[in-house]
Image (cartoon, rainbow, N blue to C red; front, side, top):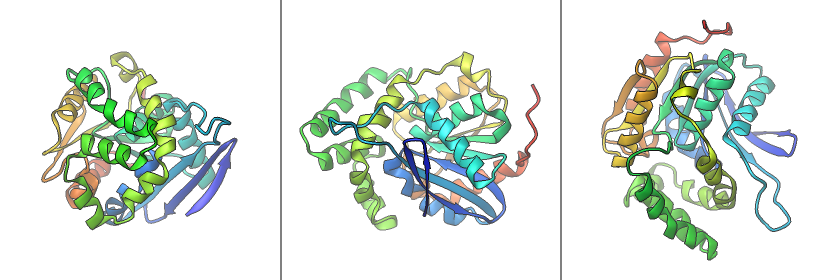
Amino acid sequence: MDSLWLGDVELTYQLRERGERVVLVHASAFVSWYDPLVEQLTGYSTLRYRRRLPESGSGGYRPLTVAEDAGTCVRLMDHVGWDAAHVVGHSYGALVALQLAMENPERVASVALLEPAVRGIPSSEQVTAALQPVIAAYRAGDKAAAVDGFLRHVCGDGYRVVLDRVIPHAFDEALDEADLFFHAEMPAVQQWSFGAGEAGRITRPVLNVLGAESAPRFVEGSDLVQSWFPRAERLSVPEAGHLLMVQNPTALARGLKDFFSRHPVCAESPEE
């Protein structure tokens, strides 16, 4: 892992140069979830990163926005000399991918959205209610219960068996990054605004990815994404839920490679 300071943001990043370029974006707590997928993306260069913000005097973190995170990603691409790349985002990271493609289309060859954490779905109120005990546990100081509750909510009760088998250190890493996640990244999702108007500004090809066994909220999210991008290609990953890059990285990589092959990276600005 290499490190870089961009203003008050510290980045640790991993760059693997193999071929055509792919940026993988996620919340800092869950970056290691990409490990199995990276191993399957043979023939591709990959770049992924974890950001850290300075702590405030109260022990929290200053506010973070999705737009700022997208800008950070662009500056990291500048640092490693990447003019353009495919951008893959999962959950929170998919929001960053959308923002990046909207604001910096010349840097994006294609956008792969892996179950983005979009709002405005039919079950939004139920999702918010289900997260209240998670937030309460965090505020009570029980980070382990908060992280466990959040991951059960989005990935299902059996998530820990999968993570511990494939990425044994993943849960501990999530605990280490819990403060940043609950203080800065989760509020950034809640404050992010995106709809059909913003989607209309995105000119790059979009891949709409859904785990075949994902919870209804992610099915609703996938349908919302498709309404924003009627021409988006769809990919269903078998035998996988929200942990799709961990549960079935082979099928996901196969679908991504097929998509990338039809939309190669080039540094030219997209047609308007």
